Length: 211
Image (cartoon, rainbow, N blue to C red; front, side):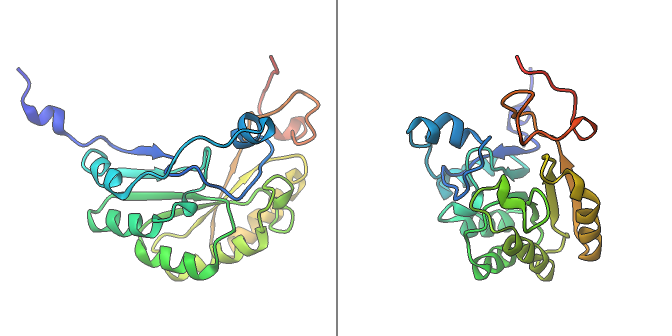
C-alpha cells in the first residue's frame, strides 16, 4: 500500500491563464478568430488570490502564459507575485500587452525580483504592432530594459517570426546583445493558408500544411 505522502507530493509546474483580459488584438489569437470576429465576448474570469494559494500547495512553479489573456491585466497580479515570492514558488511571466504604465511594472518587478519575465515583441520594437495590434513595442522594449534594474534574472525577448520581421532577426539579436537581454525566436503554426501574408517565406518557416 502506498503511503499518503505519495499523493501529497508537489507537482513540478503549472501553465495558467489567470484572467480573460488583454489589450491586444493579435489577428491569429483565439481572442480574435473565436470570439471578437464572431461578436462574442471572451470567456473566463480572474483567478482569485485564494485559488492561487490553493494551487501553490500542489505546484512548485507557475508559468503565467498569454494564451487568451495577458497576466499583467489581472487586477491583483502584484499581490499574486508577492504571495508566490513569500512561499518560494518559481514564477515565469509572459507579457506582450504594453498598456500598463512603467510605474506599475516597477512595482511588479519589485514584488518578486527572482521572477523570470518573457516579453513578446515580434520584430523590431517600432514594427511589432503589425501583428501585436495595439502594442507599443518601443515602450515595452524600454520596460524590458528597465526590468534589469530590479530583476535578478535578465528578461527575455521573445520574437515570433513573421514575413514582416524575418529580415530583421540579426538586427534584433544585436539589440538584445547590446542591452544584455536573452533572446529567443519562435515559429507559429496559426496560418490561414499557404498564402497567409503573415507567414514567413520558406527559408524562415517550419514545415507546415493547411488541411
